[in-house]
Each structure stands twice: as structure tokens, then as C-alpha cells.
Length: 215
Image 1 (tube, rainbow, N blue to C red):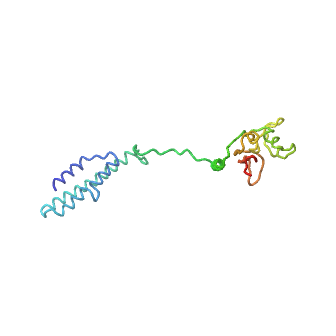
Image 2: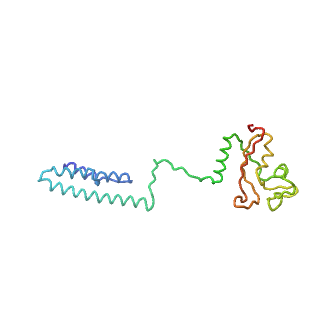
Image 3: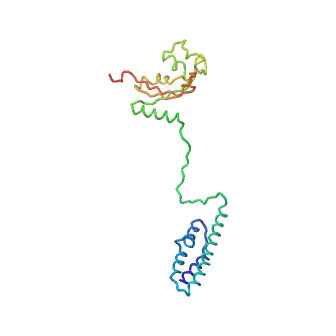
């Protein structure tokens, strides 16, 4: 038993803690209730009466030295890392950078497009800056239709008229001759000032040619 105590004393003096992992090893061996020092105190119960006093005194001194050294090592590590600093563990997996989320309008638009694609529609888009023919005339808007007025439509040029499209039906004129079913999501701009529409707004019309519908 004296030899075990001598080995622990020597190990205690030579121990050097360089990081928190070393400090935990020290704690488990010298401070923990399941450590080597605790085992020696248990063995003390089996020692003879003549040696108990000497061994007990030696173990108590070793315990006090271990606790003092533990506090010293702990304080040294805290001072070396500085306040608020955390030691970097290079063995941990990297944390992926989260760049952000899609806007709720975009998420809703993609979801609707996904549904229509499963129904057999193809997705198309066209210019947001449109001429009079594709935005009005080809869709049978009368010359005196209110949508042609400055109060309802955002014109960029007049004569010939160039404007911000008021709907996505302009894309139908460009594509319906060759595609029987189309989903036309897109941004529109018009002065439709209600609780539902505020410019600009998004529309997703889905025209189908009558010739492809089942009878």
C-alpha cells in the first residue's frame, strides 16, 4: 500500500494539464469518488492498527495536495483561454452556413407550380414590360376599356404604348398557338387598390385549349 501511495505522489507532482481533457483525467484519478485515491482510502480500512495512523496521515496530505493542484490547473486553463473564449475542437463536424429562407410568396408560387405540373401543365413566363398588342388588343380589349387609362395602368411610353403588364395573359398570345395547356405564373402591376390586390401582385392563370379537354 505504501508503494501505491508513493506512485500516486510521484504522478501528482509530475502531472501537467495542458487542456480541459487532461484536467478531467486528473479529476477522475485523484478527486473522483471512483478514483485511485478513493480506493486507497478503502484499503486503509484493512490496514493494521499500527500502520493506519501513518498511512491515513499520508493519504490526507496527498488528498489535500491533489485538490490544491486541481484548483491550480483549473485556474491556469481559465486564464490561458481568456474570458468568453472556447477552445476550438477541430475534430467536430463543420456547421453548415444557413444563407436564408425563401420568401413566403416564392414558396407559395413554387408549390402551385408543382401542383399544375403534376396535372400536365407546362410553365411559361414572358416580359413584364409589354406592348399594347400583347397586353390589350390581342385579348380584345376595346379602345375605350378602363384598363387602358392612365388611372389603371402604369405606362412607360405612349404612342406606341409600352407598359407594365397588367396580367399574365400576354404570355398566352405568345404561346397558346403551340402549347395546349400552360401555367403562367408572374408578377403584374395595375392600380387595383382593394383589400386583395396591391400593386405589384402575382397571378397564376392556367388556360387550357378546349380541343384537348375530355368530352
